[in-house]
Image (cartoon, rainbow, N blue to C red; front, side, top):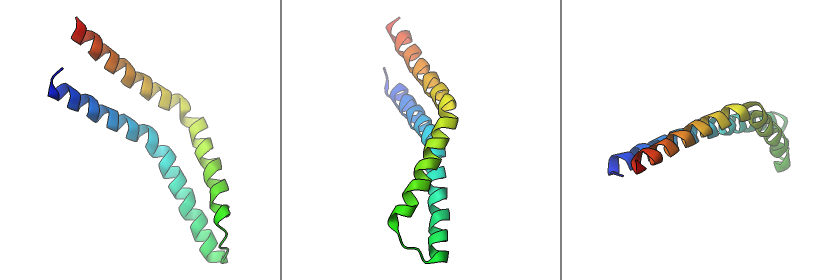
Length: 89
């Protein structure tokens, strides 16, 4: 295994992690901003109000996108396993 292969696999791993994590993180951030704007507008300063909407949205996004996320992960794992098998042959 040469250095270029390691860099390529590392780059693909980072790209895959970003693809899988970005929808969940962005939805949580978006809901947090919306709740914060609501808190500022209504002068409610309770810290626990932000957690419940974020938890609901994050679990909802995970439930809706789990099939896609697993397909992306399986594709990456298959690619890495194929590369390992090709090096042994």
